[in-house]
Image: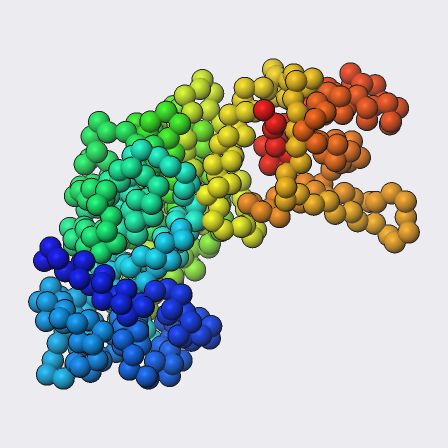
Amino acid sequence: MSSDLPARLREALVTSGFTYAAVAGLLGPRAHDALGRNETAPALRRTTGGSPLETLVRLFLLQRPVPLDAAEQALPGLVDRMAAEGIVERSVGEVAARLDCRPYAADDTELWVVSDLTPGLDGGPQRVAPEHVLGISAASTSLAQLTIREPVGAALDLGTGCGVQALHLAGHADRVVATDVNRRALDIARFNAALNELDAIDVRHGSYFEPMAGERYDLIATNPPFVISPATGERLVYRDSGLPGDEVVRRIVEAAPRHLNPGGWCQLVANWVHRETEPWQEHLADWLDDSGCDAWVVQREVTDPARYVELWLADAGLRSGPEYVARYDAWMSWFAEEGVEAIGLGWVNLRRAERDRPVARMEDWPYSVEQPIGPEVAAWGRRTDWLEDRLGPAGGLAGLDDVRLRVADDLVQETYGRPGEEDPERIVLRRQRGMRRARQVDTVEAGLVGACDGELTVGQILDALATLLDRDPAGLRRDYALAVGELVEEGLVEPVE
């Protein structure tokens, strides 16, 4: 595209006030929510005034032709150039969008993202081309919320698509590399980098880690084409890898550690199979053998095969097509042949730990979490390092006389029992932030946590509780060393260095 077009388009968008907050304010909550469901009628009723902001909303977000004079007012001197570049289409008196351009609020920064038009508005045709460049999606938003936003030197957006993850990474990385096999996606990603004045993004063509041979990064973020299928039939590049099952995720998990600097992270959203003969945790554990990485895998959702097939056939625009039933049956037959009984959806966090026995935590967590969750991932890494330096041979926390802990700022205690009873039936400690974990504790653990003020050592607190409860101090230390480590791991208490 013309070298000055992104800068001039940015100027026009800024002048028109085409920001996420302004669009949300213009539409109001009901119309804005309806647009999120691909329904445009409420938003059309809110954008009849003809202002530049309303024109841009109707043109790009609602995919409605706008009068030529209104388009030229909102995009002064740009309509013909944007038509020549394929962003809009101009007729005698109207202008229609051929690409989507929408505002995006990320990390307290206003960005704009160009992509292919959103399919399926108002129940219209949803069939997309194989090289369709997806815009901001639920998966890309999930990855953006998952990614750690601490300053790094070099970051990689593997499978960049329209470049939205690279835009995020450029906010806290000195250098960003973005790759994809879809050359059309790379053109759009380059345009988005220029549109947002982010010169640090290096866009490269290639499959998986091929364009980065020999290079290492401090952070890799990837939303791979993870749809689990037989890898037959038409392939949509943004979601289909061309590999069967969850092979694409396995390859990334196994290859990523070789491209991480010590302490570096690889974070991805992914699907994986559940087979009748193998727990999902064991299936993923095989991918981590000899990785040298700590791993925190969180399964957020489990879907049965029928629902999964229906979701992705509808995503491809095949719901009412003539081949729908045949494609549905072929996909389900493949699942049956492979012994797939369900599909898991979740997060994979890898950190190159450089220790003899890396830590692997795999858990189901379908519950509410605080977003963004990235800070909690980083905190888990720090807690893991702290614990690994202090674990004793039996797995419990060692050196209790040297350990000082502080109650997490967001921790609350809940007690359950009949009104008027002196002692509660249950005591639950619950975090309000991050993963919002809860732990049922006994009197000793509740007393220990309540006394963690950062001044007394854990050993001193347990000895005092032993005296209060008439327990053997040495036995109490031995019995609760493991529980203390678990309290730290879950973030209910924090180490004081």
